[in-house]
Image 1 (cartoon, helix red, strand yellow):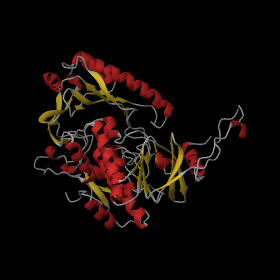
Image 2: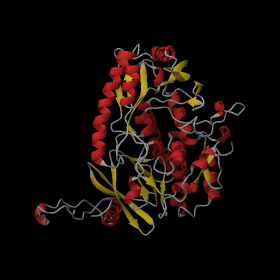
Image 3: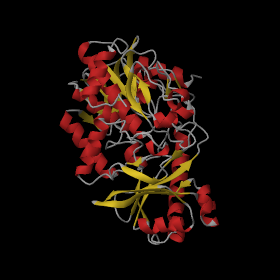
Image 4: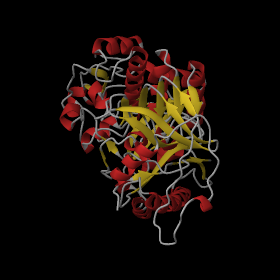
Length: 491
């Protein structure tokens, strides 16, 4: 029996059949099918070809920024997204964006520095202009975890990013899934997609995989592992609640651990983030919350609304396993209902709470881990190491205060960590890189993924437009383009 890697490589070979139009469906009478057969061999089809300079697969956290960056360089850019909107984990997870700043408040005497700007900050600026963001609200409690809370309106994020992509000239292909790859030697020639319009082949000079699952890289035959070292989740938003009464509930039990105040429904100085420790809450609430993987942290940009309550579920296998994911989807929906019941019963102001938002499918923190030319290590992150080929800097760790970047500083993110091993024109960005769990607990976070997206999209465009292979791209040229895009290096 073929293993997954061998099967993917055979798909790469089969995907090389391309042409100018769809071929009519072949009937079962034209193929020999036995009742004992375990496989059905699809007949060849002629696929319509679309041609671009850069193709970005996945319109989520990293993909939006990668496509914007490529288009900014003048590349004819396609963005392929399986859902009907952009934003990915930012919109489906619903939590705050971590983090535009260094962890200065946890290190007395350390300077406050915004370490990520560029396209990520431009998105925040657009959101602020329509009331869709809290701003970079400083943490009053819990600043040993993050110095700021940057929460966003998930629906406005979808619209703003779609608007920015359209304005930049990116060709959007929503409700379209990458299902195959066309490879010749060490170059990716095309990505095969499927939608209700049928199968198509997207040819380009450069490709960026931002699918979170590493779908394009895997289809192209890249090496990968599947660590399955995180739970999956499906967060919910609750409406008809009281933010202030939730604050009082946590405070009354001496359970409050995080607090930030920022812009909420246009009013400054309002509570926008709360978290607490379960161990000090009522026994029944604590026991049931633990059983359903409920994290009681929430963020909001609106009155009477909890934008984010997370429910975790530990899968026995990788989330690339469809059948296991199906079971997890059902279990997470059950947990969502129980979470609402808990808040109605125990939290004042939530007696008539109801679910106002869920993700269309479960969220992952990691699926495939794609092998790249450099694997960011925990020492690189925690020791605040810098690199001669770094493409941005970052200063947040999701396991703080246990793990923090040294002295409230930053580490550099090397260009090599974006280049997929064995392929000359494929970059990866987002949660699908970095094998070490501790390092990944920094690099997978939203603002880091946005920085990766700007770097990968810029590099892909420069290579496509000037005929470079990914490893031939002069660093000075890439650095110049990134600095022109307001990427921070000197902090």
